[in-house]
Every structure is written in structure tokens, then in C-alpha cells.
Image 1 (cartoon, rainbow, N blue to C red):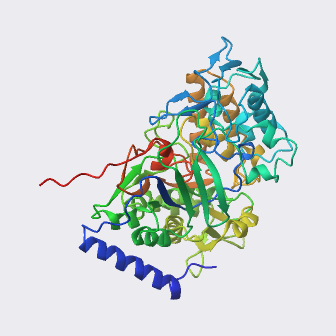
Image 2: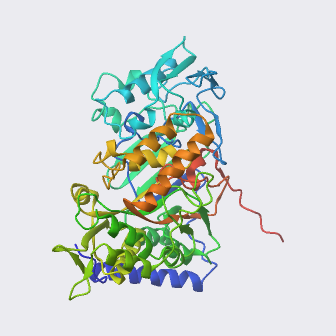
Image 3: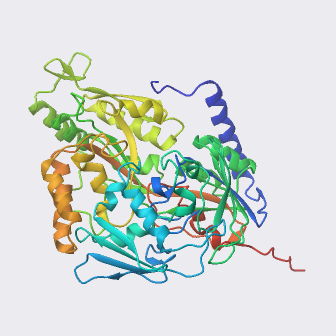
Length: 536
């Protein structure tokens, strides 16, 4: 549907949210929900399609149900998990040997051994397994067990970030084998070695967990952990204010309503999470290089950061954030509407009677979809459309569910998100490589550039850092010449949590926020805060 002013129930909900926010600001001593100590309920925006690591769940770690061979610490450094140490890497960079932790059991009491590691990775590599991230293991040639406590990975070519891919959760062969890997019971009733056990998954409503009494690293103090699925940002803020939630991820402007609430604390996590507009190659307007280059200059990224993100983020010029060692200096695009219009004029896109440009009977117009209930995406989409119109390009914003949006991605633009901290291969290969065009949510714009393909292949097939930097510099410079996406912002994730526990922190986060990330990334380490005795 076309975006319209808020009416009816939506307007009433927004008014209620604003009224509650105003009340809290006038009453900064409101207590909010009291932390129960051993139970936590948080509100998140997105729900996984599956809870199986064989299908990609928890591929970046922190799945709660599962452990990987390695894990990330608070500073995003690799540390041992199911392995007792970081891997021994062969001199040629082609073998990674892991020694496994002994005495670990799955939540059903069965022992964890090397065969479970082999089963997990071989299943993911099987073409029959619908794992959209299989390409991240493209370098893996073979994995084998040496006894019960040693696993050896053999690569087809040196792949610098391979160890980072072994944070993937390990599935038990005894529970996951012998069934349809894509739709069997393991996808919704998983068994793992992680700190929590799934007790209930009510689709569209909640994921409920209990502490794993067999957890090898100590039983968590938080005994019950629930993730409430609340897709609408305003509803999430309202339920947090009402005391239904102990914590939630919120857009920056809604999180500001809790600043004066002494019972809650706000956490801002730096992220690689970007918002971008896909410019589908098969759309006659959005697929034209001149339109793409003009939009790259017409968009006012700094205003989006200041007004939409309330300063909690920064302008984005590609999947790699500015400030990263992998970002290519000089590829920043200025806000230059005059230059944008000149590019369109020179390419033959002339303004029509209504001010919208045309060329050879084709209007410079296309629809832009965003996810219903996602205020940040809506605000980005509206700002993008406004900036585009000033250059003579008509962008019509429309809201919908992914079920509505996905079939239209070949020809319609989408306000999309993505991003993963760590190696540049993780973000750029799946987003830009032409072999992944039309592969679900990989390469959503169906971008095809032989120079980019060659550079992406070179970047993932060497351990030489200088050669890799040169390859990714090439990719980022090509995106200036012919961007298949208009990158808008990198977003800092903002969370509001009841201030009743110790041990909370944040990591540098991926796009997949709120589920595997957030201040509850280490909830197994939280401890209830002892109430202070008032002094007499």
C-alpha cells in the first residue's frame, strides 16, 4: 500500500505512546517493572525462520541454544568454546585443527563428540540443505574427525576469515540426522550444548527458554528467558513502558522517551548494520547507471543520521562502515543535488510536464517497499523518496510483509538492511556477486559487474592482507561508478533495559539485532543486583 498519514488505530496507538512517554518524562522517578532476578522478558522485532544451525540460525554466534567451536568475546575477539583453544593452522593455510572440550553433553544428556562437528559442516555443505549462507563455507573442502576429541578442516584455498566461521552452532547427529533437514522437527525443537533450552516457540508471539542445567560453562543465573516477537516499534515501546517487558530494541527517537526514567538504562551498540535501497537491474529506471549515480548524490545521508537516527549512526557509502580498516577512503559521496541533475540531463533524462524525468518513453519512477511496522525503514524510505523527487525521480513508497515484498524484488526497489562485523568478505560477497543474483535475499538488486566479481573472488582466495585490501578497494570504487544500491546509513542499535542486573554490555553488532545480539548477548553471565539497604 502507498504510505499515507497515520489514521485510525495507528494514530491512537501513536498518541498513547507519546502520552506515556510524556508522563514518564514528567515523572523521572517512575519505577517501571521490577526485575524478578531469575526471569527476563525482552522485546525484539524479528523472528527466525528456523532454529537449526544447519539452516543458518546463529551463524554469527550467540544463538543461546547452541555453541560453536569458537565464540566472540565482548571485544569481538575469538575465544574457545566447544574447542579448548584456537585452531592450529597449517603453514599453507589449508588445514585448521581443533581440539575439543571433553565432558560436554547436549541438553538431552547425550555426549558431544567430533562426529557432531563433522555432521554439522557436511550437512551444511550438502546442496540439498537450504542454507542461504553456504557460500561463506565455499573454501571448505573436507572436515574429518580424529578420534572423539579432534576435528581437522581442510580448505580448497586459503581463506583468511575461516576461523570466524567456526562460531557456528554445532548440531547433534543423533537428534538432527535421519529427517528432512529443511523441515523436520529439529528445525523447531532443537537440541544443543548452549546455556539455554527452548521450551516454547509460539510463532509470531514469543520464544521461551530455560537455563540448561547441563551447561558446561556453569548454569545461568537467569533461569527463564523470553523473547517477545513485537514487529511494530511503537507497540514495543508501549509494552516496555507498561511493564510487560524488561528490555527492548527501539528506534533512537522512541528510546529517547526513556532517558529520564531512572529505573531503566539505555545501551547503544555500534554496528555494521546498514540501510540501503536496492536498485534492481531489471527495472528500466532503477537499473540505469545514470539514475543510480544521480540517486547516490541526491540523497542527504547526514540529515538522515541527524533526524531519523537522532545521531545514533553515520552515513553509509557501502557495506563497509567508514572508520573500518577495510573502508576505501575517497569513496564517500557528497550530497550534491546539482551534480545529480547534471548527470541525468547528460544521460537524456529530461523533466516532463509534472517534473518527473523521462527518456525514450520511460518515466524515471519506481516503487520502493519497506517492511510494515519498521519505523526506521519507513522513515528512511520517505526521506529517500523526498530527496529523489527533488532530482526529478518519482519513488513511491509502499509497506508490506516479506511475503508480499520478496516476489517483487526482481523489479521493485526495497529498503533493505544487512551487515556483519569482521571480515569484508562476509558483507560484500553475498550482496554483490552476480552468481547469487536472485538467490533469496542474497544480491537482492541482482547486481552484475564482472570487475566486482573478479575482485570479490580474489579477496576471498588469499591470506595476503595487502592483496585483499586492494581487491576490496576495487569493489568499493566500482560501486561509485555504477552503484546497484543506494547506501544510506549505518545504524547504532539502541536498547532500553530495566536496571536490575549486573553484567550487561554490548558488542559490535551485525544486522541481525535483538535476537542473537543486544545487551542480552551474554545473558548467561548476568547476575541479579542485590537490593541496597537504605541507610538510616
